[in-house]
Length: 313
Image (tube, rainbow, N blue to C red):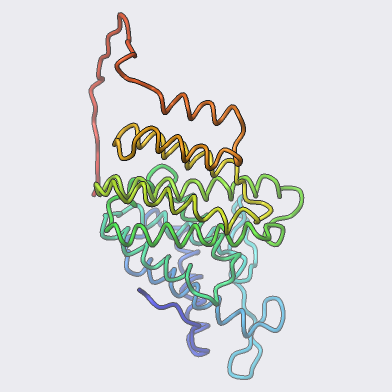
């Protein structure tokens, strides 16, 4: 895994100039196609942030080899007007812009390199949790309709590790969400975190199915149910939604793969019924008892439209 560490004092200004160069180039050039340089730009950004965290005595200033220097990034607001920012202020927007440039020349191999790099940042203990959260958000905003497909194309071990890393961060933030969001948007933020937790769990199951590891699907669901003991006391964790999602995945995948008997699944539903409401439990029971032999379409025709798939990978 790529190692992220605080840059040397002698590299700070050089790194800042490199970051500034990208920001200025984005205003003039439609596509920046040096993908290795773009990947390295993400790396040096976070290494520069680590230096800034330790050596910034005041806003817009940083201490380098005993001297205080002005540390300013010349950026632009949404209307294109020039503004001055600190390096820590641009985290989300900057990473989105870099990843969008990477996407223009995306291959599976390049996506794998990107994931490895982002993982190294997300597991780094010195990177502040707020920056990790912004990085996850940048990633999601950059691959809004593709991430779940791409994650299934890289090696399963890497995909699994990547999903677990992100889930762990989401769980940690749920313990004190008000530290990362103001009161006005706090409820919406908490809802987003819970949906993200479910989102990553669902993709973990999809990765296992894509790799034909069906037994692992049911082990993952059971492991997630067992984890409830460690997250049910987290005040802002939406246990009801999480449990319903897991039981629904258990039921639907069992209907598909016939891993356990219906009686065994019924027992699991009984074991966890205290976490969900009666309507949800009723829906799960009905779904479990669904018999395709009793289902008819009547007079119906289905036509497949002509499909065209363009894939760059």
